[in-house]
Length: 423
Image 1 (spheres, one colour):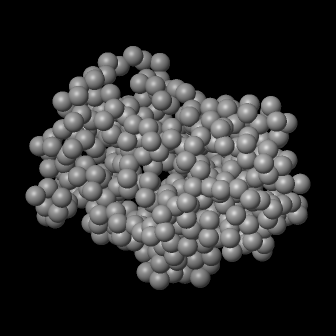
Image 2 (spheres, helix red, strand yellow):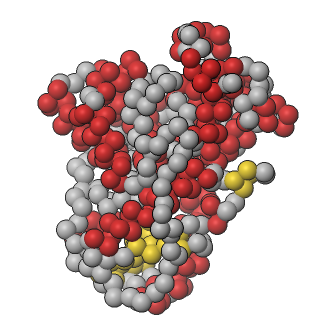
Image 3 (cartoon, one colour):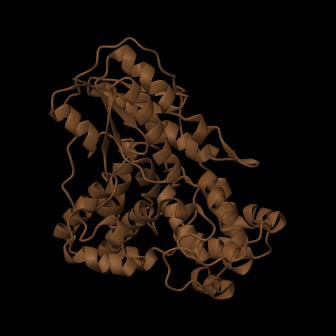
């Protein structure tokens, strides 16, 4: 059989379920990635849906993935068009029997999958979807069905941890049997390099992802103090900073978990090593929330039935977006985001609550700005967290609001962070 692997947010060869099964079965295999115009060329009003920093990061990830496929004996094709347009013709030319893909559950991704399915059905080519291979815990290993997912994370965590199952990672194939082909694809720039402001270590690709994991655990042992430092604002080691590679799929949550458990065997476990796994569970939770609630996560009321009045105040939003609100801590966070594509977890909570709770400005605008700018944008975590902070998501206290003076005193007591970004 001839198999085509359709890549999306899974830009790796390690622990890749679709690739593993295709190679294990002895099939001929070729890969494909599309820089879809609906994602890379679209915009939210006056700003791009995919900002230049994340676009640059993903280009590097794809370029390295092409090299990895070549080393394993096959080829990853790239195109600047929608997959539903490219895949049927590619399947016809290459005589593909089945297309393998890792499933996604958010609106646009799910609709794209359906369009591809319809296009392939006409050609009698099967689309095989590997469900939930991107999460730490497979949905089939949860103690409840998707529709029974608790609407509070604590309940989800407690039930899941009672029978915690994380499947073993899958090895990199020794070799990929190539599909004999003579087709052209888009050539990526030959001199890709990452220049994201103050974060030069964020080079894209699988090698960089595992290098960062190795550094954070084994070289620096920073994971042993993660719980104490995770709300930091300055430097690069207060957090694992693995989120960008996780979002692009250069490394799997299971690979991170497996390495943490290996670290614990050598250096012992503590609250901090557990807390990084705890954060991976939060990431899982938002993915499953989208499986349960689907389109509701993209509506102003979220998963709630109330009708809060939201303001489409462009003046306030622009001041917030550009870091010109007059609130130093908020402005510092927003300027760091624009210049580097990154913002700390503490910062994300503060600025989203500020926009949605203090000014009642349409929280979807804020989520869209984050989508544009974040190097580690993940649809589930982004919209899930924004709905949470806006009081229309999975938070039992929908009136939660941050005290900016208290936050500044606690996390930037000497004003060092604010002075760095607000000049």
